[in-house]
Image 1 (cartoon, rainbow, N blue to C red):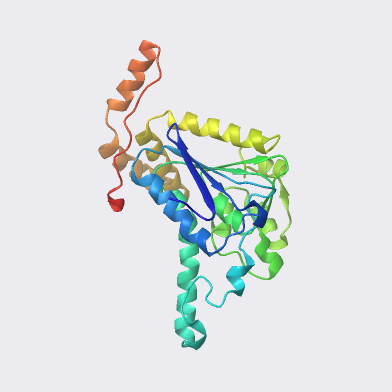
Image 2 (cartoon, one colour):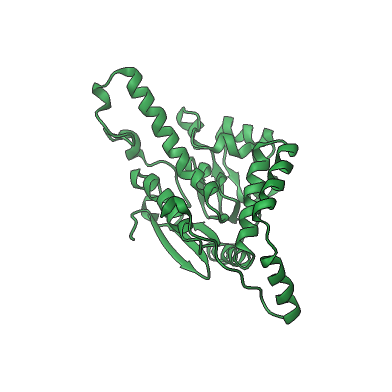
Length: 282
């Protein structure tokens, strides 16, 4: 399938999804919001993809929401809103905001980890997007900015909910209140990104290597790890311990562990079966 805003390639059980509108700074047009969750669901559906790398093209990773979304008569919600009753218009606006949020929450719902590789500017909605990824990496020229405050609005697609779980609270507040740029070195210093690479080529190559390493592990164990980390983020330690006990009761079977031991004894790489197809996408 062809996409307007993305290029998708799968090799060695790793999906590489690229934003592909460099001349428009990879801004988020209407199609972007429809395509991204559809791509993630499609990659997840079959069970054969074990990691996803999200990278970009051109000078900037993503310059945020495209102005056409704000100036279009129908906007993202669609319909003849101008003629509708005020309560219904506002209800549709809320639905639209939640639809945008779900586009990025698709990363968390996927059974595989999502790794974001950021070059140049990661601005506005771009920050919302990468905050939903499992890990973030950057080139030396990268920077992050919560642009919404600079245009008179509150960020509403996930940055303010996820960023404080990734960096110290005061750092998140400073970025949210001032709209300052955070350079790559500082993002690494506070833990927003795992590693800074010299340039874009090294960044993409390095992140793909990490994704391939993840893809070599048991996909069921990786999925379980992702599930537990996300659950622990939003729940107490006691709740998290209870959840992993329940998960292990059903999902922990000895086959993958025995394969690890056998492979080590035989001096080879372990081989694991893919996850089964997601029944939600039959």
